[in-house]
Length: 83
Image (cartoon, rainbow, N blue to C red):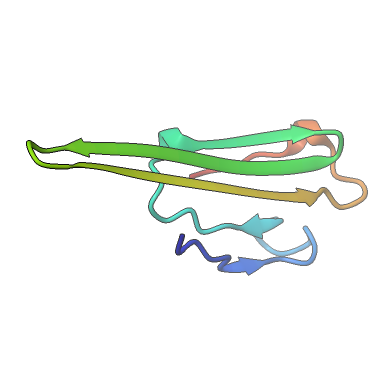
């Protein structure tokens, strides 16, 4: 997998109020799931692909999970994300 973290903001006091930027290159937005629970944000993505020809079968499988804690004072209900 060639996923890499672009950058992580250390606090939510930045001008755009971002907690994290995560590169999910290679995943379709429909493959990505963001959950906020118990003071943690979990970003996961899973993609399965299968190609068949008359002589071969190729399967690709990619999975990504990243979890981080919300900073103190950030309410779970106020967390938003965009893909």
